[in-house]
Image (cartoon, rainbow, N blue to C red; front, top):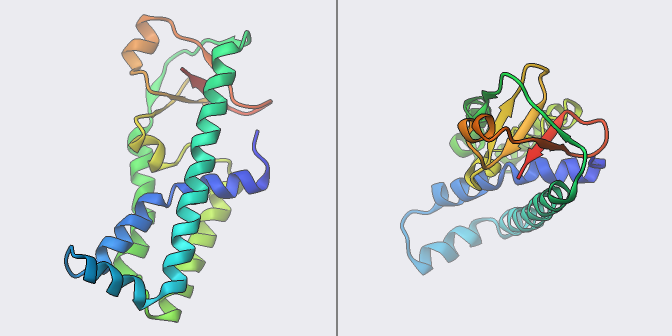
Length: 183
C-alpha cells in the first residue's frame, strides 16, 4: 500500500491541524506585525513546520486522488456487513495531538525536543500498527472512518445510511490491506 516514507508523510499530515493550532497559540493578536514577531521567535522551527505541512498535505491530497482514481476504475469491489462509524475514535486519538499545543514553547529547545519525542512515539505506533486512517485531517476534508464486522477500515464521504441503503461497495487500498475506499 504505502512505503515507509508514505506512511511517515501520512502521519505528519495528521499533524496539520496541530501546526496551525500551535501557530495560533503563539500569536498574541491577529496582525501582520504579530505574525512576523511569532515567526521571528524561532524561524527554523516555523520553516520546518511549514515545509512538513506543505509536503505532507500534498502527499495526502495525491494519495486521496490516487485512491479515488483506483476505486472509480476497479472491478474488485467488496461488500461490507455491520458497519460502524469510527469518527469518534479518530477524534479521541486527536487528544494525543493536543499535548504539543498545551506544552510547546517555540523558544525553548527542551520543549521542542520533548514534543519531538512524543511525536516520534506516536508516529512509531501509527506506522507500525498501520493506523493511517487515524488522521483528523481526513475528517476535516469530509471523510468518515468506518469499520465492519471483519474489522476492515472503510474511508468514504458517504454516510452509513447511504452505504447501506445504496449497497455501496468498496475498493481495497493496495494489496492485502484492511483499508477500503468507497467513492
